[in-house]
Length: 151
Image (cartoon, rainbow, N blue to C red):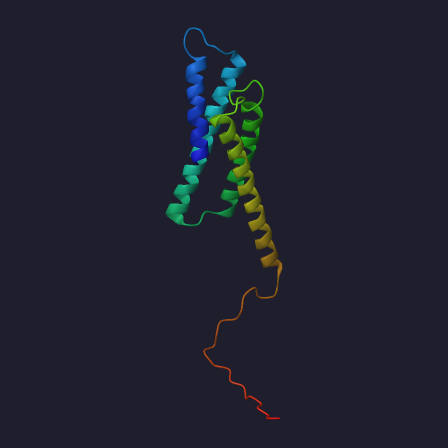
C-alpha cells in the first residue's frame, strides 16, 4: 500500500509542477502518462485498503477474490512500468516514481506467485486420499518392555 501511495503522490506532484498552468513544460504524452501514474497509484491504494479491510473484518477473504485482485494489480502495474518508466514517461529519471513503480510491479508478481502456490498446494491436498496430518492423540501412553540382557 505504501508503494502505491508513493506512486500516486509523486505522480500528482510531477503533474502539478509540469502539466498545469498556462504554459505546461512538457508535451501532452508526458502529461497523459502522469495522469495514468496517478490513476494506477490510486487503484493500487484502493485495492490495498479493501483487502486490509476485508482481512480485518472477516479475517479470511475468499481465495477467488484475492487471486483475481492480485492478477488485476499485476496487469495494472505491468502497464504502469511500461508507460511510466519508459523514455518519455514521468518516471524515466531515476527517483521515487521509478523505484516505487518497479517495487509495486515486483511485489504484485510475488503476491500472484504466492496465490498460485496456495492454489497448487490446496489442489494437491484435496486430490490426496491419504490424511495429511497425524491422527489425534488417544491419551494412552505406549509402554514397551525393555530387553536388558547383560553380556
